[in-house]
Length: 538
Image (cartoon, rainbow, N blue to C red):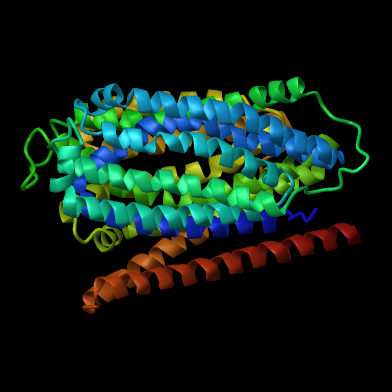
């Protein structure tokens, strides 16, 4: 087998995530400009209904397959790893089919429950098959990741992102231009924006199907990965299925609880924002709450989710080495891999969060030029979401580490507590602060999740936390923000166009961050060398 170590594997996954997220931005940003705030409310409502079911059936599956495969490969049981894949495909493709049918059959009542009418039902029905395709893809990705081969996950993510951007935008654009002629073929649909949203959602389903096609083609050429000749030690299928459920179910429920925050936002913003609802030209008073939610989900949360989706790949990359170190009792390797994973996540998240925080207004105005009112609503919420983004980015590798040491149920309890904080925060803050209140409660809930996960991991693993590297990253991040803000202010006063002002600011912030980080870590390295020399002399 061709394995990759943590850094190489994580780099492959993060590079693919950057490409996939770039393609996702190419999809979501023009789509928001096509649909507007109300149209994005239909799109986001379908996603909010779909994601909990998808999370329950898919999210824990990839990690469970990865952990079980990694353990089998560490013990040289390659045929057992192949059996794990077959058992997982059989069980979870059936579970995905049931989940897809459930969403499809109950699309109308789910739409009525979420938005108050059935206009989003067609969008919900269009995304239902993604649950089935997602289960197959999760098994294939997890088995490859467990063998420390991150290329298949990276390629499938890129294929998925490309198809989503191309098909979703093409379909949404076509339907938006021809909705008047198509609406008569859609009984019960009176808002043409709902049809355009459903067309965009269909692009998501086609993208998930394309990932399955990729793995089918790959399997046609790659029959076996690893030497399985002469191997006799195979686990029983019932034992494999039982362990898959024991490992995947807590993770799936954890992901389900995490995705409930989208439903919490949808319900609380639409129901509790009346007193803080602004006057929007061309939007009726009845549509304003839906407009607010669509703007928040389509703009603020779209930008917010760009970086966490990249650091989420660190969790996939860190799982095999953490599992191997824990199974072998390698305490030094466990400590080294844990620190590498968290510091790498912080090094990516902190400058991105600080930069987006100080440049929130120009960023949203540049990305959403056709939706000025929607973008203006999201400037302050996006700023307040940034500390929460850092917490979420660090939580992903921590949850993977907890799973690697056999504490798969711990993230569920932690996330449930964070979700409760989110619900209480929304109820208390949205009536007073509007969308900014939703952002503040999100940041508070992710902070609770991060510190609880760190405490549980340190206690379960017996490792002692090291804060010095994180303080260095925070200091460098502060210099990044200061440099970006100063550069943007100078460029704006000099009359540069918005795009060039942002490029100048981002470049200045990046240089300040890299220079500061280099100096700080060089000093830290020199101090460590001097300390070792003094210890030898003594």
